Image (cartoon, rainbow, N blue to C red; front, side):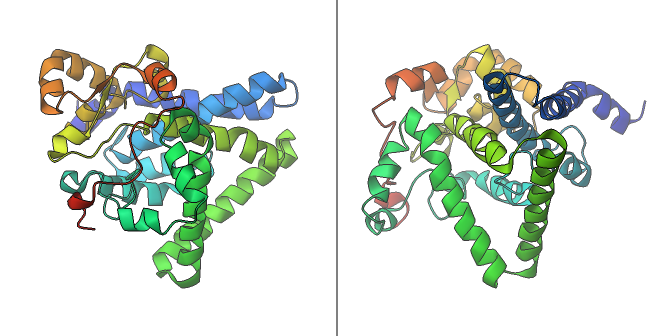
Length: 303
């Protein structure tokens, strides 16, 4: 059997996941008029959160070795807010380990440089602090993220390079087409989908990244191991084993847990013991208490 065929066959869990997510989303959309609204919103939110986890898997080279094929598999804007191409570009830049967590360098940093934080309007400073709690991350995090993304989109469309203008124009048209189809074919209004599905799905996805990185002098000590329960592991496709993912970014989601448990002590030694005993712990322990300050230690970014 050719190597490419063996690779595709070995990736059957991701192919199955693709079919399951897309078919679930389509079924929920088409049956929206008949399903209980509470059930529908909860189920669709989980499916869209799951889809965002799938997009992460696609950009890391699964289920095919072709970035072009994987792109088309994850281009549908079911989660609305982030263009796949932009996410792919920024996330791969995030994997530059030496600059991991540095604000202004790591595009996925949760931290702000002290000078930037000091210049924030007075309402945004407590909002940033609140977003370092688990409920704040779910509720306030999407607002901060979408506003920053909207500013980025406007800047790109106004004076950005042609590549970025095309990216945002294509994404905007794709989202518009999706929302029109949902409204006309399924009876799901744009506001219902945006605020009742895409928004809470983003918040749920952002819970995963609340404390998956921390400032530390040693790059390997910046990446967490979260020993989550089966529900969260499946929803986030084992990305809770984040130190394993950063050590082996090409490793598929269905192998992360096995690789971690084969050398649990080694991974915890290498990441400086940065261990969280599940997302339930974060929700309980950090319901009111921030996991850490939003301001990055000044010495490490030279500000």
